Structure formats: C-alpha cells, structure tokens
Length: 96
Image (cartoon, rainbow, N blue to C red):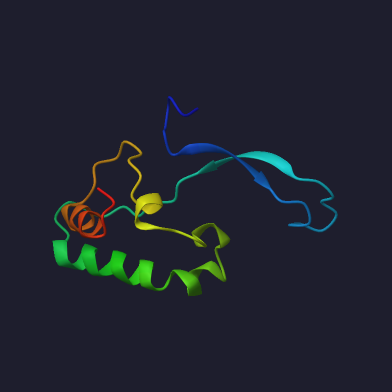
C-alpha cells in the first residue's frame, strides 16, 4: 500500500479504545492532510498551519493522532504537491 501512497503506514488500535475490545487491532493508518486550492493566498495557508501547530495540544484532546506532532512529522512528503505557504512554513520550522 505504501507504494500506492506513502502516507499509509502500519498501525494499531490500542486495546480498550472501544467497548469490548480486549486486544490491540492491527490496522492501516494514513496521514491526514489539508487540501488548499493553488490560488489561496500564501499567507493565509501559512497562518492556518501556524494556528494548527500552535493549537496541537487542544486538538489532541479530540484527535489523539496529532499528539506529539512535529513540523517534520506533519510535513512528510506523501506525493501531493505542497502549497507555497505551507512549504514556507515547513522550511522556516526546519522541516524541509
């Protein structure tokens, strides 16, 4: 599957995540990404990414997958062209 989309990876749903789930369940995880149209203002995309990153602790309360996110982990190349505003944000954060 990684040959098809490098955003896929092996993962597990930890036991106890759902009622009656008594063991870890192997699964396929995938990268979550935002899609922005090419014409969207570069600064808008930059500011959105900055807000998401700076609010990751709050976001982790509802989406555990973002817990511990770093610019490097968020900016992994999954084969989709990056918006110039996002590319600038990642470069400035040292994740290029």
